[in-house]
Amino acid sequence: MDLPSCQNEALAFLERLPSDDPNRSEVKRIDTHANIIFLVGSQAYKVKRAVKFPFLDYSTLPLREEACKAEITYNKPNAPQIYCVALPITCESNGKLALNGTGSPVEWVVQMNRFDRANELDVLASDTQIPDVLSDQLADMMVDAHHEAPLRSGSGFHAELASYVEQNNAAFREHPDLFPSEQVRHLTETSRAVLGSLHELILLRGEQGYVRRCHGDAHLRNIVLIEDRPVLFDAVEFSDAIATGDILYDLAFLLMDLWERNQHRAANRVFNRYLDMSVSGAHATGLAALPFYLMMRAAIRSKIAASTALAQTDQELKRAQQALAKTYFQYALSFLDPSQPKLVAVGGLSGTGKTTLAYDIAQNLGRAPGARVLRTDVIRKRLLNISLSDKAPPAAYTLEASQEVYRTLDETIQAVLSAGHSAIYDAVFAAETERDKVQSIAAHVEADFLGLWLTAPMDILKTRVAARAGDASDATVDVIDRQLGYDTGSMLWSEIDAGGSRSKTAGLARRALEKN
Image 1: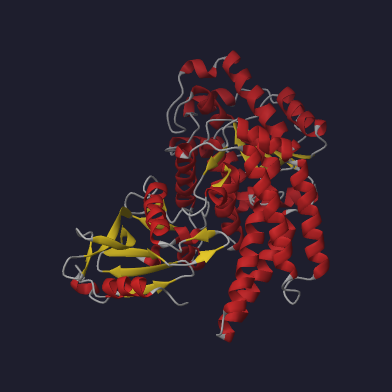
Image 2: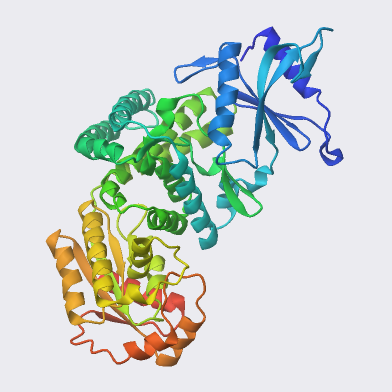
């Protein structure tokens, strides 16, 4: 792509910058459709190309200055380790160019601290399964990013989604060799119908403060590990409209990307941890929009891959992009497939491994990204507004307090199921009345139901509870002694021997699910 001569001069100047690292003396240049990045020692300098597309305009120097400053504004809160400052390249009185000199600006750059691209999450996700600890950190990262994001209008976001549906339809029809016309028609008509049904919900979520000016591009390639913590970078700075959306729509990009990479456990873990760490329970109702949000993220990635393939001259890279376009398109279709919600109640005394089992089976239950796992321990801490790892006071375990926990959980479970998502209810369920009540919740919303009752020898229960650290549960060995005296009544749930290995317990539970 041809660039103005003045910008070419600025680019040549950046290529000649001296490195501050003798081990990385060579300046490396990375070109994208909208940016040019120079890696110089420990630093990186990003220049906005002098281009204009339907979705961005960097065609003039004032617009590029504004975009560079906006990139700092929207990225520094999430990634202060990376983003430094927007600087001018100036023409000095002697006619030479300088970085942040005293002369007139001829170009603008974003100065950043360089990082190792091998630590980007798309690279890591290709090599190994993302561990639970990192999944939890990713969820916390997204919660923090959304907490600081500015509020926006729900009506404007809904209108943008409607335009995306039509843009996607037009783009898919330009590539009949990649996207069968009947499948394009089905996806478009289904998308229109689903979005229409979500209109009131999206407006409500706007009123509730859940439509915000978010990152806008939170996929794996825009997350990097720095000092063993995930950092979100490269937010959309060029379009308020593209970056604005329901915070679940912003989260959906990360969930979709993990799902497509076959990181199903990580996607489910991020999904659950994010909702657990959010201060409001209103997201349970908002889950009705999540399948549409996942579809939209996949559809947009699909059409971008198709467009990239069209511009490729290398035939191998062209075929790879075409294959990716087809893959994302099929995911987009599948995200909107009807799904019968199911409620799985996992009961048992403390130490039987209820939560461990819940997360081991959640990724394969219901529609993407798997089942919502709801725990009495987590709800109790949220109602108290304390950290999940903090110990709740004795007053949190009175009959009245416990009834409030179960009431909140029952309402949340019903909202999740009504939104079309499957759920796992993790609680002791020692009383027969409690088990009958949770089954009635599923029946009330016409969801399928399976109750699992976990058992294990007393010594194993006590050993497991004594070894816990950093968990939401406050159970102790003394609690187990009290629980062993409970009268559980008639047990009609499927009994699972949880005294063995984690994998064995999960296998027994999956077989029970298959029979149900």
